[in-house]
Image (cartoon, rainbow, N blue to C red):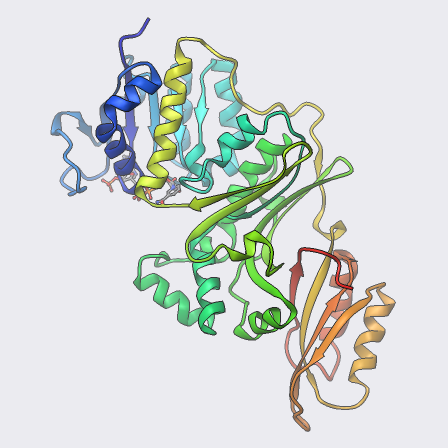
Length: 432
Ligand SMILES: NC(=O)c1ccc[n+]([C@@H]2O[C@H](COP(=O)([O-])OP(=O)(O)OC[C@H]3O[C@@H](n4cnc5c(N)ncnc54)[C@H](OP(=O)(O)O)[C@@H]3O)[C@@H](O)[C@H]2O)c1
């Protein structure tokens, strides 16, 4: 029987300092709830002299993470440095030495999660990764425990705060993407290089983790269709409003006939859906299970204390289970469903074309759509500009992605279409 649990932390940045603060400030409560005291005995960083806004004895700081991985007295290694290497190598080395792992590293898990979980299963150790998706929102625990008796039917997530902040501002203030992005960078809501966030890659990383957990599909990141928000214009947001929709960057996973759809793209969501009301940097995940039906988790998807709270919960969970030696938690992939190719998904689609305001345009476009079995639910034409182009918006009935893409190529090649058409997928009820 252990007297206490020794934790080694690799990384003491935003998340690491939040986790350390919680472990200190709530030490007594954590001891009671976890059943044992938890002590952070060593912390690896790059720069020993950096002020972290938290007092750390110099004796427990090191610049060599190997001192943590190789220390036989450390029970749990908390990896909070991010990126692929040396994070992966350190985690695998710690696992091979029988240490349990806590990480918030979504990029690593999205790409190397299967290998890490398999190594942990073989070594009989646990891997906690609550902080990797939606920061302080306990979605991993919900899927693993609270909803464990359900077959998950679908997941819709707003799981990138930066993109949601930008889209919310563009919607509320009718401003352009670049303008809001610059403001978000100044306010610290967007990185200097925002590609991962606004390009949908960060959302795809998190979706890969969720799909693996919810459906047992070891999804390859490059098989997740990923489209970011950089091409979203205030004009499309305004048309969305007119039609009763908000534009959100959604991570979508659905189970159909033994196949799983997994995609990330800007999506028009009906105004009355709870997820359409999630604004600013907040995250939300709507999960539909066959028994629980639909639930929504909502909260702060990033930040020092919210993500630190998820990390601490994993440390406590492992502490509680260390003595009881539970079965490992890696998702079984036996008889796992397969991932559905993007071109075979079906959806309602919003198109915006910039087309010359001249006779015959509508019949050419509707002719192409008709030949590709795409039926029009609604059409809006704004403004009259003799000889110039005007926006033409088309909302389709449910159609196949494959047919839509074929039709788009033909429409874009028309002489009367003056700009690359905009396409946004639509969730919700089939339009009348
Ligand atoms: N920030 C969030 O809100 C958030 C939310 C969810 C998940 N995450 C994930 O959590 C992880 C940590 O993110 P973060 O925002 O806390 O990062 P961060 O603020 O950049 O902190 C990284 C820490 O790792 C240390 N470090 C980096 N490379 C190292 C190495 N080779 N050896 C030793 N220490 C090293 C750095 O040391 P120095 O301090 O000396 O430079 C720093 O303390 C990432 O995987 C991220 O994706 C972050």
